[in-house]
Length: 457
Image: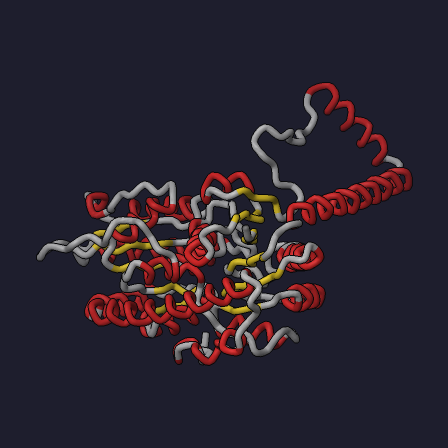
């Protein structure tokens, strides 16, 4: 029996990234139904519960239910420690020396803990035939620097090779990569792979710019290949109002964003609220939906608060309520919409997956690349600054051409699925020990024209 590991930075309630893991599980099982699958993720318990596979943590610090938590002191002990610290601060030389010893002790403990984690990780990889690094924007260092995503990918790739498993990077996204150390880590990690592909031309070009491989194919995001089991899109009766789904994200939100800016976030929220108010005034219904269940709902709440302040009485009747607690709920919500206006990358992908006309809000070049891949560049606006008139104009054009847009999406979605099917055949070849055929090594020639040129961002 073949053993396949799937590695992803998932487990934080991002349903778009979870869809990647689900798509890979489906893709592997269709071709290797007897393969034993396991996960390597940021939240193993969530992965096991959500996807039904055993999982291990990709970093130190993951905790399982019932495991002990470190807590701060309280009561007399805490007050006593505070008094001692205060006294030491009055003797700067002593305090500085003790602080240095404390930091050194922490560093030593960290090194020893990481060494033991590497041993346990290697043991988890032993017996594995293939490790799949699954999509998403994992080739980046904007969150945590070089010792976060780049180091994690490097250590798992090297450990997998040491355990005699092959490594593949499937439809991976890249950027930003700003640190010299990050570039080195990622080059070394990618060099371990028997096969690599990137989900857009921008990622492919960025990896080439940092000195990485230059001839790997561009293959669409893995979620394009997901077989959803959700309900079919609603059938519209004559005279029914259009339902417009809006998927916000905490762009520049100080509560969540890595480059926070309160004024930018407030502008984003107020513009989306004004857009929703305009849709309602034009006779449309509005459905707000999250794809990240931790970070998106507070943004939706902020938008609705502004909408309540600026809209006439009774506007709530035009808000479609759809509780979303799972991926199936998310699919049902998108299926209930006629047009979707997502900001999140996988909000756009899932709209296309369900055949919906999409007005994309681009917070990163990858969103514009995706819209170009699907021949929908006419229906994308930039998030910074988000312009109400641009949203209204692009939406009006999309609503007038939504049937043509849906036909284009259907054609390009079928092309995406064909490319992903070919990629899974490549994975199956590797898993079965056949090696790569010349066609598999050079499958970049099969990339559709929309994927084969970099669009301006």
